[in-house]
Length: 146
Image (cartoon, rainbow, N blue to C red; front, side):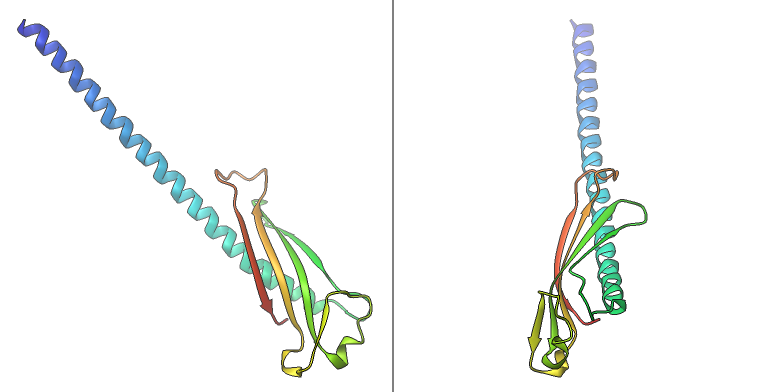
């Protein structure tokens, strides 16, 4: 009887230890996924800031005498993220607004201090080929002056 009880106790201890190790491995897996997601989200936010600055440079170098930019696309160098920038309004002083005839997003303003501001909507999302566990999509609407 005593040998049978020791065998049952050994089996119970093995089951208990395997259950504890499985719970530990699941907790580690959850934390690794969380760290990877936070790292990728931080990369996407940094890419968003870079896209805003690149869009401002492109707007500043564009000649607005005939037309205006309304949409821009950017892709990260590592192909993890893509960004779509939609310009929603150009805020231009009323004397300068007459120079742009073919642009439907020009908003005339009365004060020259706000001349040149741009309202843009930036959407950064992860690409389909990126090795990211959870898809990422960040949207930011910002008012900038090129």
